[in-house]
Image (cartoon, rainbow, N blue to C red; front, side):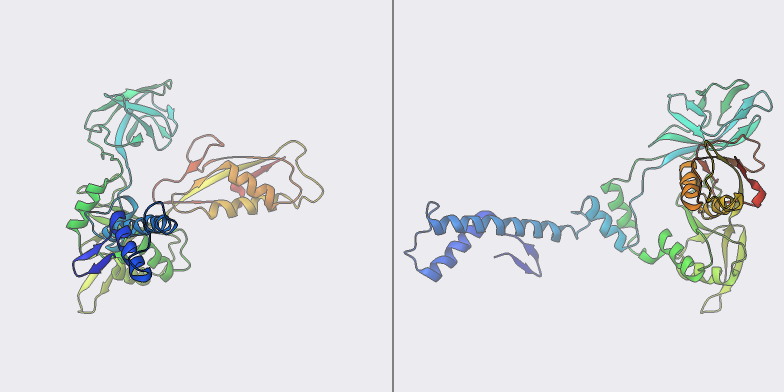
Length: 386
């Protein structure tokens, strides 16, 4: 039979299982019993043997998967999670570029540029020429050339936009971390504790600060300052609102953060550990990203049960203010919320823009930049048209 002892688990193959079953049958019924493959009992033993061998084979694979060198795929991910590691997801290359041309020319977010190899990038923000250090991101995951001067081609033709260039190298992308790469990181970081992951830190902050909304914890695992300004080998907790208790934030960060990893952010609070040593914990408040919305009640706009425009404004405020830090406002979701939340509306269309951003109203998704919280600042920023 299969064995599990100090030397490990050893499964039997089909022949060994069949031999063991025949031995047991002869001990039970005598040596004269017919166990040939053509006999009823011999055939039945063959069915049992195949099923038992399959179970032992699967058990062997499960046992072996607890060894880092044997585990693959999800099994390896599960082992990594035990020591607080996650497989690195694919990442898109990013860079900062300067845009030139006719002053005042508007460049919408999503405009496409390319490098000398033809690999394409999209602008992340709406811009006005001249624009320096504009953020772009590769359209595809993987190792894309973002070396200094590599990005020099405009793909989206816009009158008044004549040049693009990246004077400094960007952050390279990557494909999903392979099993071999993850094993290497696991070997180098045997003492990482599972409670120190980004998600665990965020959960600890949310538990300590129930009034906080949409906490974000971003990390920079590279050796250089990243595109969002995070210091090398640091993490930044981004919190909203800015009335949260600084001491609670600092105490939670200190008890949750990995040893040797710095906190990052413009806000700070000093705390003292159990040995009387002071430590400065840092974080950032989310910056308001104010949005203006126009709600058009089209067609035969309202029925007899329509409670008035104030009810529409209240729904819009609820949807926008519920978005997380760095969240995206989508017209479909807003339209559905209004139709379902306000009685008497027959048809609705919404368009929106960043307040004070200088752009026109659009129905395309509007995403708050890193570290910014979508909000409706004033009720008058929501206009209802019939």
